[in-house]
Length: 108
Image (cartoon, rainbow, N blue to C red; front, side, top):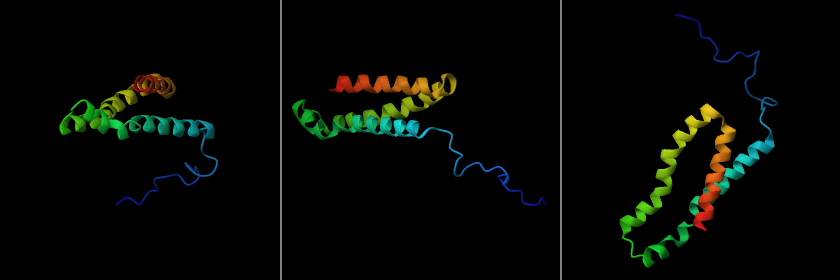
């Protein structure tokens, strides 16, 4: 039986103070983007029952309407991940921001 080998080389720390190479501003920008995108996806939820009543939607149609956003995310996220692997994360993030802005504009 082979002796236990450490998973990490202790002479080369992989994480810890000073090992983060991403600027803090970039991390905050991503956090703000995710927050605004999440807010945009849920901001119409409180008025959805009023629209459903006005258009005489059934309860199953309301359920489909609420699940459409999540379904779109499930379909789009793997494709965007593969696209980001090919062209880079920044262009995909910018494209996604423009798409989210267009969706918010049309929703408004």
